[in-house]
Length: 320
Length: 307
Image (tube, rainbow over all chains, first blue to last red; front, side, top):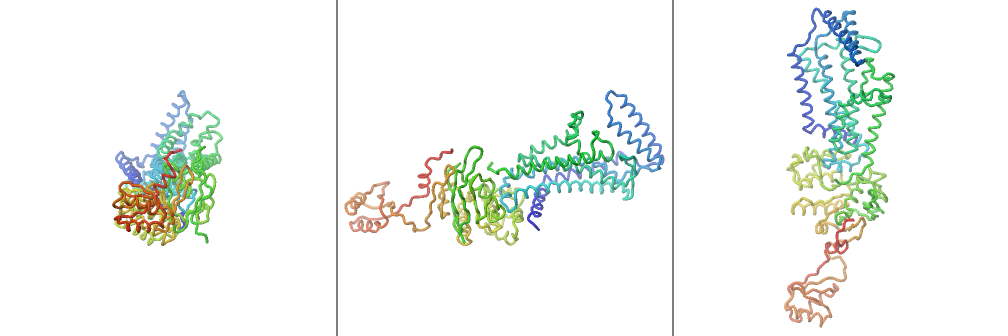
């Protein structure tokens, strides 16, 4: 095994041997169990005989809400679109006689996608500390005087952050699936669901839809982790990196909305992190395409890593 | 093949407009223990950090076994084991896991080698405890162990005996001497404990205001061929002895703290003793005083003024 691979292993050990990391996984698992218990006691709307009636009622309510939104002083196109899409999906089910699924493990996994905000938060904490802590502990000196270049050290640390994000995401996914199976049963791999696509409503495999939902969230996760990692490399201080990254994570969409009427708003990172908008057709700014967003993401990604690399490799490691 | 382990040539370091190191030149050879001493702020730590690539070099070059630390970093640093300032380790891991961590960063460090270095520094009993429970002395030993893992040709130790008890200091000192003599390692030590340096080192470089002001060889035995020595005599009666010395041998002496002192050439010592005995003076003690490193140090550096 090369020193490089061994060093990634070293970095993984340094993440997973520490108690704060165990606490993160404990919190995630406790939440998954808790959500499952609450969902079950509050009663899940299992499939019933008259599902057609339920969907029609849902449609009526949606129409009313749209009406109200239109009459309101501010017209909120995005919200209206969400309700319109719900109606489209319901109609597709009614026309093609596709009954909604029983609430099962897949649905539970898909609902738990909101836990990825917590995974982002934990990844930010790990990314923020992975360089800054070495400076805090004073171990950076012994780490750097090895037959690995600073670029290699930086890269092993970055890869280690991404691996942490991946393992934690998988942990949420697998735990939710297993807990979901125990509490609600399993829909199977052949179950389907109805989704909106730019070219109309489609029936797709439930499994692949869950994978897509998680996959899209990965973009935001990686970008925020990279941002925190960059701050950690530049300022060598974890609290600043955590603070800034969390602030941006929670205010990202607000920032975009605030500048929404400016020409350059679509160049803001957070206008591009949600790639799912191209899948549902609910696009934030006119003229934005998947290609545009991916280009913007790559530009930001390269910028973050270049800054991190420049500061980490060029700067002196002086006494404290 | 040249015996030079580390070579600094015209090394400068500027931070901002302030020039901290103003052209340092020296070489350290295999098999010797080289001491780097100087007042606080003289540039010891800066020099050491440049040797291991933690600080960039503004001008000049540092070569380790002929390889530039700037241009051939990996090859150069492979030959170096070091403790820079305090031996800081990961507090949440055991001593053994810390060593494993560093061992993974060097190709070819076996588990046997890890056990060997643990034994060398005498940490067998506590190696599986977490480092946060270690005393400073134990951390220092673990620091030395990690520096030796990959059998480096050059060992750089910043304040190696800091935090050790007298028994530990003596043990480490002997160990460092053995590394230099038996394994032919070049050891570079920085310290402000001058007596410590004097006991351990073959050669000392004194650094002040970012310049090497002097090199001193420290004689381990009496192979120093100093011509003039300071002699201290414990004799009675002391007045009579003083007269005898000036009458018979034309040596001027003075009485200091109950001893008779004089500056003489080394080969005069037998004649002095003989003359005194012949004139019925009782001789209790004859001590040749060597100038200590401390004397030399203060003579060279004067007052410690940080620029």
